[in-house]
Amino acid sequence: MGTLMFILFLKLALAVPGDVVSSFPSPGDWPADLAWDGKRLWCSDARDGMLFSLDPESGEVSDSLPSPGPFPQGLAWGQGRLYVSDGDTKSIYVLDPRTGNVEKVYPAPGRSVRGLAWGEGALWAVDDADNMIYKLNPEDGAVIGCFRAPSRDPRGLCYDGKYLWVSDRTADEVYMVTTDGTAVLSFRSLGPFAVGLAYDGKFIWISDFQKREVYKTKREDDERYSVSDWKRAKIELRHIVRNSGPGRLEDVRIFLAVPPKKLENQEILDIKFSPEPEKFAVDRWGQKVAICRFPEVGPGEEVSAGYVAEVRIGVLRYYIFPEKVGSLNDIPKDIRKKYLADGTRYRIDDPLIRRIAKRMKKEENPYWMARKIHNYVLKHVRYEAAGGWDAAPVVLRRGSGSCSESAFAFIALCRAAGLPARFEAGSLIRGDLRSVDYDNHRWGEVYLPNYGWVPFDPSIGKGHNPAGVLKAVGRSDVIGGPHPGLFVTTHGGGDSEYLGWEYNSRSMYTLRGRCDVKEGRYFLWDVSETP
Image (cartoon, rainbow, N blue to C red; front, side, top):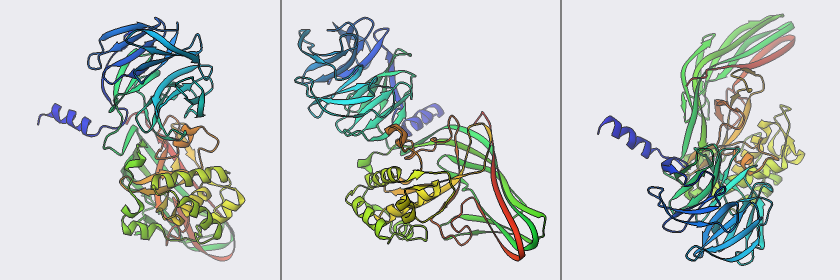
């Protein structure tokens, strides 16, 4: 196989949702929504007031109709009819494309219906002014259901037989949403102004207003995740122990969590410890730890240990289709044994934990079980940057907690419900390419059969729209802003022989006399603009 053919094969083999299969120019200068009639693609043009029928292979116009209204936007195909929403008349028209006759007209449900879709015997409409998705009776336009759109600027809409897909202009994302409004996954739209969507039974079509292009994209493939926006960074960790006396510290040990050599979106290119560790060890969770030892720290003295790591970090995004997730019985026995165990911060036998977990067990799909637990913690635990590490039952009864405490509550509920969970932790970039992180971060991971360990962050997403909550599920870009933002150092379950319930680093020592001891830890980030 030639080099070029191999590259093309590799690209096809590694396809993920949103990858473009083909494209062609839009038929008019002001493309809006799309619809699929079973053979042909339809595109509404808002400036010319036209509806174009397109050959899906070439993009050539095979037929055209004047729109019933002067400013057509939303477009859908159902029961042999075109449904057209108009931005000027605020109406929805039911059009017979064979005759061009309008059979029905009814008021649009919102102030600015941008997209239409047909599914489950109903007409669906997305409104960007109200930020809502409406389910309509196609006979008279009566609203029979509604929920919030996933993000703030929804435009296109289509239905694939199970899920709704919604494009968002501002976020430049296309979201897969259940018909009750839960955002499940998303992919980046290729163009910057995705206004229309259609589904042809296999592929999702996207019309882009700015590019004036129509894209044929993958709905799904075998790849579980993608990684984008790779950057190279130098990250320094220092753990400092200061003794103001008047006594002394003896047998001071600083334990450093050694970041994993390679993850889906992280690769350690080089790491230099300072001082050189006395030895390395591995704890009960498989976490490698460097141990630095200092015989004594007298009054007024300090010691420190750490490393400088050269890393490549990218933005991770999982594409989880719930129906592809296996059952709890499909999870390997060793994973279940290890990550269903109790811990001193979990207390899974507590009556409150058991009571909540019992409700979650009614959901058989592990993905939906994890989402329900995640939503429960978001709803019932208010995030506070207080740094506390109380046990899960305390956190749930109190109703507030740090990122670690939210993770403890999430993991405890998952384990009590029979879903293996652990924590992942490390450092996060603080907005700028060169920044200092004093606070660090911890979140949860759930084992989903057929997908493996998937991150769930239960301390973020509260109060946000569905897209904001989705960013906390299977993603690593939620905190890092425009840059890859999470540096993973630690995987664990707590009660580690070396780290205890700490992550990143920990110190232990013996006091000889009264000592005023202060500890500090920081990560210094220096991110390159180039991969």
